Image (cartoon, rainbow, N blue to C red):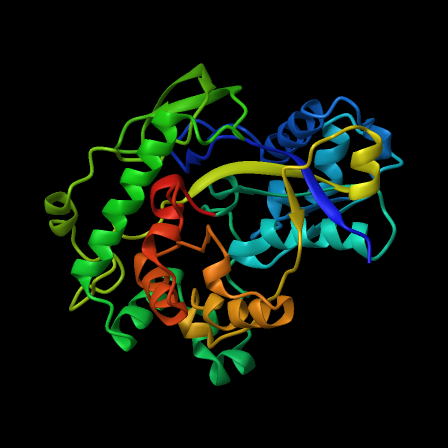
Length: 352
């Protein structure tokens, strides 16, 4: 089987949804920017060489609809001969897209493909979102957890597996500190600054003016976070006895990314040094009301099929939608905390 290598990756910063810097910027334009930026890092590759663009999107509707991957690639200036497709696996949609791009290289004989993700919570998850007929009553009767809010599932995990409020807050603090350090030390160099127009809003929701801003880093980090401050926050999803708060949960955000994947042969021919090699990808399902613990089932499959052990892996990046589900996964998989999300995660960077 052919080897797929990653030669470039670019992303926008993640902006806070609603009041953040991308509250006037379309998601397809964000994705176009990410695609252009990834290709700009490898001038040896012509845009016409790209054989497929695959973008993940959690809510492929409205301005993220109409096959946003195809819209974005054309908006990025790629020729009409380049195809595009959009995939949805909710929080892991972008990862799924990169895996599919790699599989196009490994299995289908492509030499160049792009995988990535895009999401604008601001422009999609709002009052215009169509939810009236979203729930299938027949399926919901058997699987009521399928339509639970993410925060509610985080409460289920915390209660069912005894993840304490104190442990959740302690991990949230670590995440904030790691992202702050990564920003200060320049580790997040896949970010490409972008100039956009935004609406400036007061906290009461009233809009004031529009302004042009240069966005150069993720907006969700709170480097001044303290344990004392986290402990004062009320439960956000379960008022009586809840432990999931705005402080130990991820922040909704807007942004886009693109990763350029190539065959090892083509990269060598162009004299490119790969950033990494794509080895394997596995998925697994879990009970819907326990959303977020999928890695507990997927990671063992990955290790078994690759013949690896966790002790042979130096860095583990794991979904961090909520501290409760991350800590449960960490404990079940026995991942040392120092190896886990060393540059921070969604609690401190943004989600999805």
